[in-house]
Length: 338
Image (cartoon, rainbow, N blue to C red; front, top):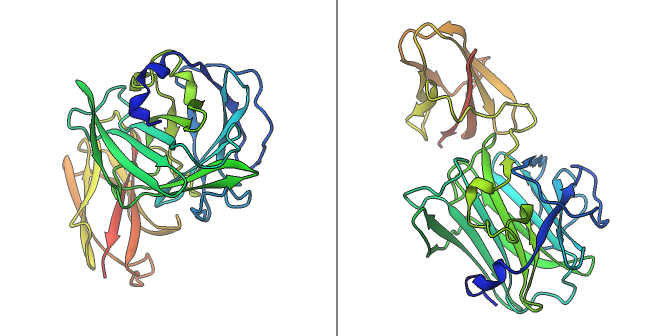
């Protein structure tokens, strides 16, 4: 039974969030009394290594993940949701403990996101949801654009998204990898906070087994102002989340990608002290181009050659530029090409 053919079911089934697990501790116990939480905030775990996306939830691979129990009000059985990310991808793991019959009948998952966390769908349709449908011999993953004035279906295939289904402890399980930093339709980056909603549907039983934050029962599943918040982890270096509401500051570099040299643009009020640091993809600090220098213009530029603080040439790859001021903290990704 496809998701877009079950509108009536949305308002007739009750779901509740059962509580938040602790990252790093794998627990398959049932949740405590189900409850609905209003706009809770969750932080994804930091993945030191990427899990193998094969549909089987491996304890060691997902040990660092944030773990949530999502319970169905009728059965009280949990659906386990796991969230973690690294510099490149957001990883989603799901175990449907209510479904032990295996993949069939078009089991499916829907992952909705309000990327800028403004409680509304973007006018240009850049926000929406990833929809995954699984049957015995096929799997389909599509991105649907959602517009403020229409909940229609503008489906596109995103080849950067990896998804598999399988069995974990005899129960149906799913693994998904969504590319970050503009490399997929999930256009989030590390340190971002986004609004999310996720459901899990058992096609054979024609029942929804998981509903993040209980929004189906309240008829609010399509209303992003009620979505929980997910903080995409900013990595082992502990970099703070970028300030989404402070429009006085901005950070970017041109060209990007670049070879040998790029120009870093520092935007802010004249006279603001600024420190710029460069990190490699593992979060290791490799250079501090300026420290506590006052902005001489509202768009000051500095040239940065792809060298470490010791003058060694850097290998092609992804690097991160951090701009710190007393009133802001910004990060941007820079790509050093071959």
